[in-house]
Image 1 (cartoon, rainbow, N blue to C red):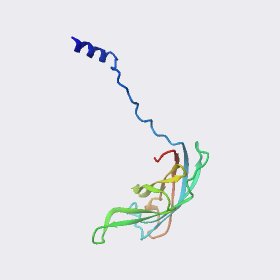
Image 2: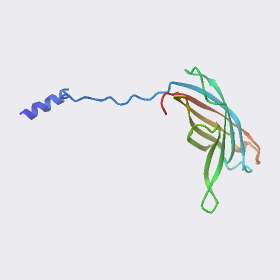
Image 3: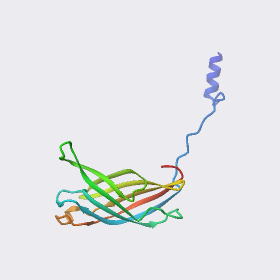
Image 4: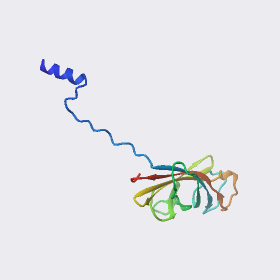
Length: 174
């Protein structure tokens, strides 16, 4: 009978003196701003207008703050440089549809995500960088996009980049 009384007490809301620890609070950026992108993509080889996204080449991205959001200052930098190259197998033969992306400048910080995806004949970079900012951290996420390759010439001429990005300031490493 004692066992049933204890069970009844537990079911009725009596926690028997157990201390509950709340989950860690959700981490929230201290501020967020919106970025607008421009710049150029210069292919390292002749582009085939019918082949869709061809990301191999030099990506020169220009960044401007388009909306300060809730930030009083934005330390996003104004230009970023990336190089996309073909990944190759052990014989030096390019592996189809695989690209390695290198962040050339600015050289400080860490690169969490450096990928390029293709959609509707265009290429979109997904570049996420974290830069120490005193005791805090700046996270810069930019998505530069090429125009569709079918609308451009079959050569190595530069294409204009456009796109958006986000700047966030964090009290701890995101």
